[in-house]
Length: 266
Image (cartoon, rainbow, N blue to C red; front, side, top):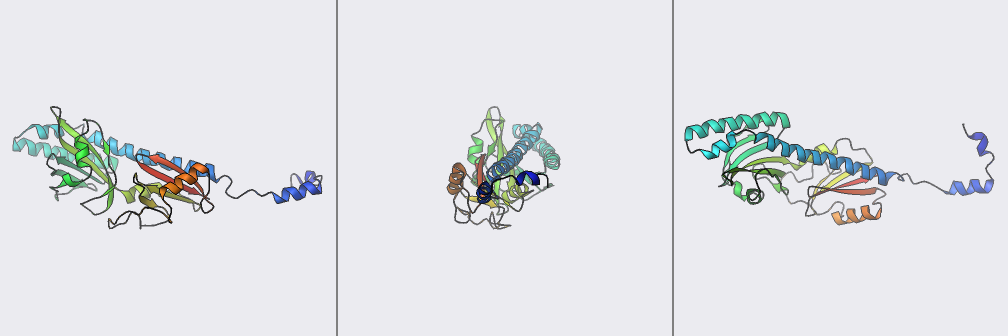
């Protein structure tokens, strides 16, 4: 051993003292927990950014405005066909789950799901939580909605929505929706056996927990729980602030677009 000779010179009393000093196995865990939550926060931020870019790229097609500017049915049909092809092209590039064009009355005019056009168009989109606030946005801005249960598939989703304006008036919305389970699945990639990742929404409801498998969010649209293992978001935030472990795991938190990610390490 490299230092065998030097260890023979250590005084017995000092040797006994050092033997009593132990370094916890999770000594580096606080820094590792912070690194983990920061890395996952960057992944989530970039996913939001990619969704917003998908909307912006789609709306570069002038057919969207042209559709709302004409009352000629033949022209509107031509613009609609152009819009359909535009959404399909953007879907292939951005891997969009669902995108639709909605008018001021809450009617879906075009709907694309998982890379294919869907003729099952809703006439009641005004009931969705994103509808009213999105119409209040200035053109060019994007609303990142609170999570909600999609009336189309009954699953927990988040929406990205931007208005379409003609002559200074918002006349339609371009809406992009993605399931929380898919977002969570991307965030869970690369987690080690000693790592846990949780996500809470702005209201403190638990969106996902890497230990829960497919149970969160509830696949049937059931209410989101308020805690994990009986612990609320506040408990995790206070532990992270104080540097106090929970169940011998270090805790770190990070807010991203209204969500709070919680990393447990150790």
